[in-house]
Image (cartoon, rainbow, N blue to C red; front, side, top):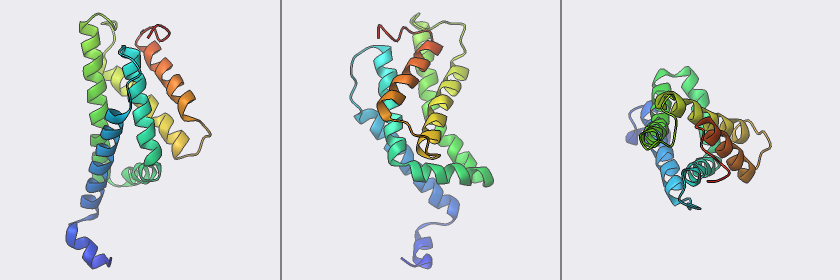
Length: 160
């Protein structure tokens, strides 16, 4: 396709990246939903979310690397990247607050800060592994990230 034809569909490079970001976010969401839940505990649900996120990141690693780099130099792309991250942080924050109301997670933890810190751990791990090329494997990564996530929330990972 010629450049001129391509830009018939998009007003700007930001519009292109927005379309890409929307497609990526949808792919991550679909993978999270498609990943089988191995049990019914909170630990099982956290493991499912981590596995789904890492699988989606594996599939989209090259594009995630481009987006991370482009977001550093373009304020509009940075806004889009932060906005796409917001879905996962809001989801985790809501879950943590719910677990606190149910007495499963300590009330002295701030759900927003926990969601951001734990989400950053998983996201940055995925970046270092899948974009920068650190040699990791999926199952040990899922197991380790889930254990760290659960310990941070003081959930008993062994009992599930």
